[in-house]
Image (cartoon, rainbow, N blue to C red):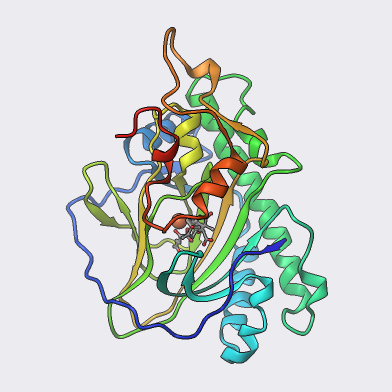
Length: 318
Ligand SMILES: C=C1C[C@]23C[C@@]1(O)CC[C@H]2[C@@]12CC[C@H](O)[C@@](C)(C(=O)O1)[C@H]2[C@@H]3C(=O)O
Ligand SMILES: O=C(O)CCC(=O)C(=O)O
Ligand SMILES: [Fe+2]
């Protein structure tokens, strides 16, 4: 695994109010439903976001990792700062000056190891739990992507999942901790995720919001027993714009701390990201210039959080 960010000193952040909306219905997909593939495709077309239930991931695995992560975040700041070389970051997101009311651990899942080398900072158990969780989340990601391929009538059904399960797949894992505050805070600014799909799980504390197609922001009621899926930028390209990556953000307004764990399913670096041939109608042209995940990442990881990264690769930017 690889280090992605550095810790920094405290930074004052703006406070932000969020909007309420009449939209209360986040699409829910029951993975044990024989029609799940239809519901997945509808949710991706209409919202770019859905919740999955009956996902088969043991809750005990999730809660024990969350407990370990929480113990880490409770450590004195100077101890946590020693974990900067292992992906710990505090209030700074990315390299372009974005800030948020959040501290986190951010790991790349395909590059070597961190864990055993750092027993003084992280208990060995923590890394074992992370590995188990990542394996379960990769499996869940693949199941969702295979059902998605079924729903899109594309073959083989592994056309999307193989991108995330390949030996060199470049996925990420992030644990975000949003400390309690008596003020409304911008936890994580609005953005789309660059990868294929992301799978978010949080404790029972609200904060996550998504933007609907018309630009209205809606709150996502937390559900610690379920997972939330976002359509990411690469999936938008793979479906030639049939699915749009969903803008989301975290606004915390709670005296309770929020903790979330996110698996970002990404392809191997040299994988060409282009619309899936069997999805294209006769005469349909790609809306995007050809690029690899490595090209996308190099461009994306050099942008501010709120940037519309996908527009760099559109043939006719909107
Ligand atoms: C400001 C940034 C943080 C980010 C890299 C970027 O330059 C733009 C994309 C950001 C994002 C959003 C989703 C994930 O949290 C993340 C790990 C990713 O893959 O893209 C973050 C990046 C990050 O925190 O480094
Ligand atoms: O913490 C969350 O609930 C979501 C955070 C997020 O969108 C991200 O880390 O990319
Ligand atoms: Fe995100």
